[in-house]
Length: 218
Image (cartoon, rainbow, N blue to C red; front, side):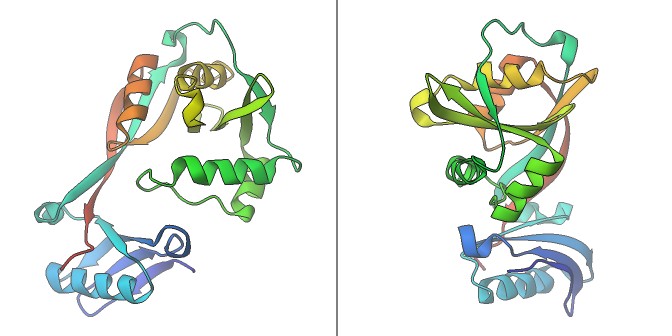
């Protein structure tokens, strides 16, 4: 299902992100220009629900605070020189044609419940392989997690439940490969396990990128 970059209703304009409906039954509404808020929210909700969304989330207006708050997307940063030392690197197997499907399947399983996490399609996995850096984390020959990054930005860290606790070493393994003076990442305020990990690594919140509210119920 395709997104609608410009959804024009009777009472406003928004971007509708619908691509997660087939995978997670979620739709996201990013308000642009609104003339009458409540009627336009109803329009967006009705369209998303008609498209098959069971949950609808909205961002883009301060006046949305009357809706149930879900989470905020935040940007966190850390000076690379201030990172803890890397004492025991995690073995990484780079993403390639042979393990791309394993990476994609693991990614979707680990991040399915994380707010605003996009499903990794076959096309997206191929793009990551070409444009970014990604790898499977391996412990004693067994796939234990994954990492995705660009130089200066940690895109994703995920660990299988039986390897809980590996995330700290895995994150450091990737972060110490970067060369920029400052490293950054984005995290959902609802993902408290990830927030605690990043605080432990020395990251601090730099800004709130967006605040999301539940538009599912009338």
